[in-house]
Length: 91
Image (tube, rainbow, N blue to C red):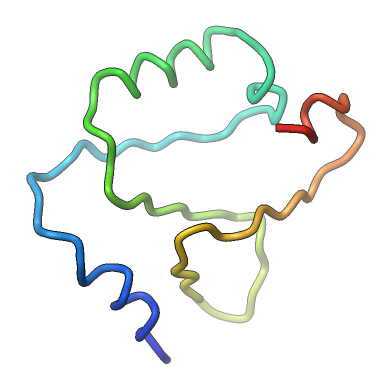
């Protein structure tokens, strides 16, 4: 397994104090364009913690024969849903 790309992303990051571990299920995709209690909770948490230098995302949306790591600054978005309002796709 080649971890070169992962190491090149991690090497400039200094050790920092531990941040809280949060489980954030995305819920409905509509949360990206609606104002509701779920969205307000996300906003509240984001105002209470530091901006992280890295984020780990674990997704059940991909099926692979094994465990894989994607390490890049801006991974592409995979839209695996349909039938929502046009505004959601514009986000």
